[in-house]
Image 1: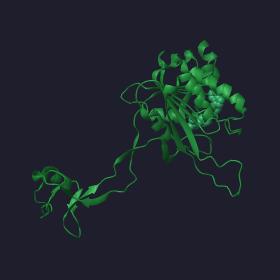
Image 2 (image 1 turned 135 degrees about the horizontal axis):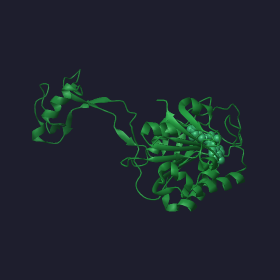
Image 3 (image 1 turned 30 degrees about the vertical axis):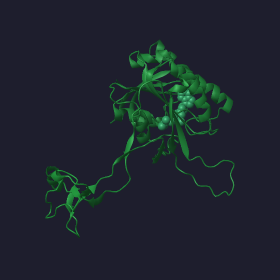
Image 4 (image 1 turned 120 degrees about the horizontal axis):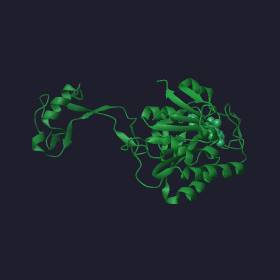
Length: 317
Ligand SMILES: C[S@@+](CC[C@H](N)C(=O)[O-])C[C@H]1O[C@@H](n2cnc3c(N)ncnc32)[C@H](O)[C@@H]1O
């Protein structure tokens, strides 16, 4: 389905009416990256609610999310330690404590300070709270950082079928070769089995394996560091977060009530997921990045008027 962008206030727009943009079905993934209650005025929006106001407001947003999801929906709440602990309490209450799966820690760019004492340490991480009432999460794996290296092809133990001659050598006494003769011949052709340049004895190339990522994601920076949109997230990180949703299911529908620069839209286009995004102000960068057609109030039907302006997008790439 063609992605949809709605210009409006999520505290109003996020209700069951919005399901019309997903064939009247609940959304599979909700990615929430709201203002963090930092007190800053960013270039595109003011993050100036008092802590108390923010908490009442965000609790209301989570309650609205509850109305547009199903039992297996994945909810991702992206914040930092300004409010994440309050958000966790609200989300536990609204989605159920048993639905809480993980807190994922994401790396921010570290800004240096010359001050010898500070009120607060520089925030160098973001937090994503992951909720899902039923069903599994995908186990995200990444390649080990270890470089490939050559290792002796001999392994301890007697296995007669693995004691053939290779490069003029047989395994040492009490050892065997690691692979069958057929596999060894194929591996020589592929360049991953060779005579050791010094000793001539067989050795094979150990490739970096995969490892489960767990909850500390320090291998990538979570921000895009765009000058044009200060709080834009990295597309790679958003793709990874969305990939927690088991991908054996086709037609994954994502909603992002705080669209910002459109990172989630870009991630969804790359993943082939359908998408609805909302923001109070549709950033110019979105209009540049995606071919957007703005349906004005005059052209739109009543529901659209209630919803603000609906902008249909067609990706430029
Ligand atoms: C942290 S930014 C989102 C950044 C985005 N994930 C990205 O990668 O570019 C928060 C966004 O929420 C929007 N926003 C703030 N209050 C809102 C509200 N009540 N309804 C809808 N959008 C809102 C702001 O305009 C801003 O674009």
